[in-house]
Image (cartoon, rainbow, N blue to C red):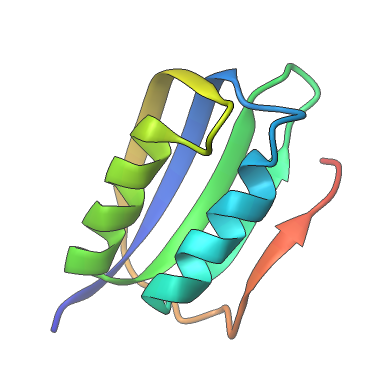
Length: 94
């Protein structure tokens, strides 16, 4: 199966609603690696690596978000797989 990397920027009401923790849960459930973090402007940024099919599932999940969140926009950037991650982690700060 073809692997890839997906970088997303999620806008909306996505901080203070367990968006990062829910993203981590979803990524781990799918077997994806990478990270997610809050940004100072109130948005959330994430990078996922895995198979293209699973990355598409992650992109769809990000468009919907966690319970309590209100996603208004998701910018997707599809990139080449690097294999640099071994787990999916929560990151803090810039």
